Length: 244
Image (tube, rainbow, N blue to C red; front, side, top):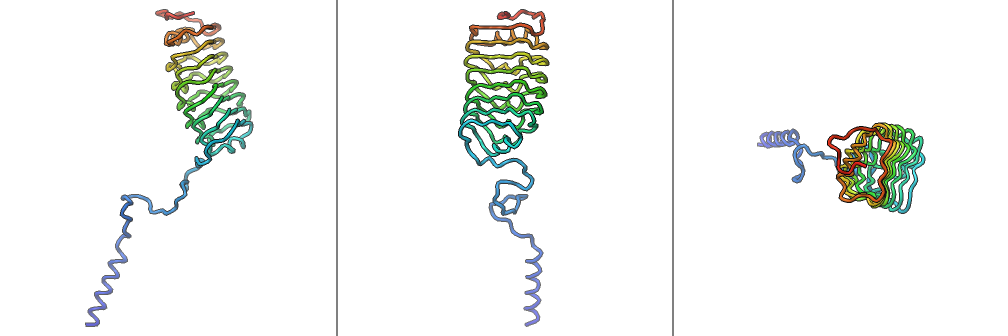
């Protein structure tokens, strides 16, 4: 009898040891059993978006300044990206709003604005000026709605389209697009319905004037002051109603 009991007990122990561990009731098949509650995964190299709002203005003039803003989701004041040696804005990936102006100027080594990919609103003006190797503005494609006083895009040698601005609908005062040598179209401004006062599009050597005429046609208002000259001279067929 004792031998029989020992054999039954041994059989039970073998069955328990070889059975898979039971998952918690709320854990689906394939879910990790990792109990680490840190929001970072082992393979995540981006910042944790836990810093909240940065109060005031901030100027990025070195790559370490970019890292200083890692994790912030908003800036209450102006953001200046004015950094000749900066090549990477990925530490800004948490940033969703800039309360006042966003100025992106004189960034000689910056090839794109992808680090601003989470940005959805700019409370003031948007200035993109003298960035020689930025090829597009796709990093701003999440920005929607109206800008403040000015949209200023000038002297960017490699930008060939403005598609990253397609979510912006109006600017209260001035649109200034000049001296962007390889800009070929204004398709990215197709969402614009209003430019308040002054529209200047000049000196864009690869931009057909017909593109400007099409932009003027889509506006629901006519800016008080329109300056269009020294772009690529072409013949629009048919001629848009608002060709200057």
